[in-house]
Each structure stands twice: as C-alpha cells, then as structure tokens.
Length: 69
Image (tube, rainbow, N blue to C red; front, side, top):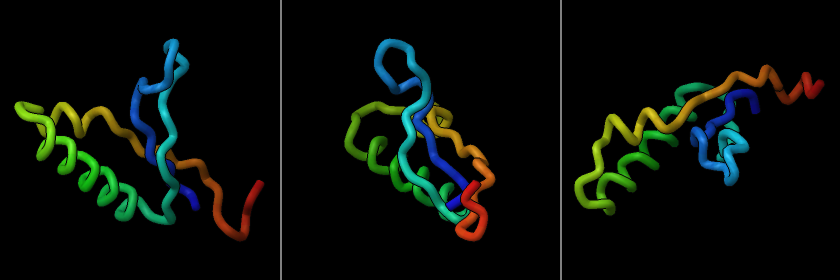
C-alpha cells in the first residue's frame, strides 16, 4: 500500500490527522473519500459536500509491497 487517506485534524488534543486506510492507487483512495463524503452528506442534514471533501487528504507514503522500508 502506498497512498494513505487521512481525516484532517481529527485526533484529540490537536495531535494531527487521523489515518483511515491505505490504498495502492490514488484512484482507489479518491473513491473511498468520495464514498465517505457521500455518506456524511446524505445523513447529516445541511452538510456541505465541498467542505466535507476538503477535510480529507491523500498522502503518498512511498511504501510498496516489494519495498517496505
């Protein structure tokens, strides 16, 4: 896994971003975020989709199955 999805500033006591899942491609990571955002917007009345979408980020950790260093 190389690309990690984080929810920005969700750890308690301002300890940073909450790691969620890792993916092999950015396409998978973006689809995961989109599904998560769709769920939030669907079930939280009045939530703004773009605002929620901006709460997530993808970070390239550079770790591949064959290169776990």
